[in-house]
Amino acid sequence: MKDELQIMDGGMGSELTRRGHIPRTGLWSARALLEVPEAVLQVHGEYIDAGAQIIITNSYSTIPSYLAKTGMEESYQELTEVAAKLAREAADKAVLTPKVAGSLPPLDESYRHDLVPEDTPSREVYAELVKALSPYVDLYLCETMSCAREAANAASAARAVDPTKPLWVAWTLHETPGLGLRSQETIEQALAAVAEFQPDAFLFNCTSPSAITTALETLVALTDKPIGAYPNSYHVPEGWTLDNEQTMGGRDLSVEEFTGFARVWRDKGASIIGGCCGIGPKLIHAMSRELKG
Image (cartoon, rainbow, N blue to C red; front, top):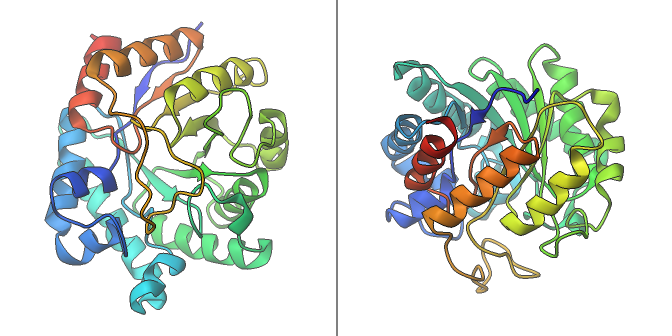
């Protein structure tokens, strides 16, 4: 019997950039919390209207390494709380209140397993993020984890600080299907690294849909926990960062392509499906209608 389907939201930073609220570089989506918090609230609301049953806090870039670009690294707890409050406000306004997932992101560049900070300082920062999120969120989402150690650090802090809330772990994959995580560690190694923290769900995100399809085939045989996927709309080139001049590769997914992948994932056993970079409310709405009716 399949787990009941839960629809996640889509990308926040890419959507704010598309609407002209923030540039692609610098503070990225954290800038919106300072300059246009009403835009963050609006995007959350549009995802809920599109059918999202889970929305993610806009705290992906409220981390010391990004905020240090403008000397604001000491404000990371405060801005994380602002992001959590906005998501909670959007959820509480909805007729059918969605769950709020507190984002626990990479603490340096995304996809860069070679830049993951040491374990002790990582867990200390993650613990502060959890404390800021805790009053407002329903679950924690360790997302875009590029290697096994990065996920273990985030999961460890969530369980240590707030052990009663559900914990979900989402890894980002190598763009070549079948090569495992960005670090090229296997899915088996990824699961083993977080096993002691007993996550409540396992997902893949911030990756091309084709890589996710292959990884889900492996994952479903390794766990009886809920599994899920929220892909990028385009490919990520090797060495890409938020601030360099490389652009995302490929082209945006069409509605038909995105819903087609979602159907495949549901058939393979995924019960948590949404979108990441480049996936906006239009695609989430189409996918929700396709899978939920």
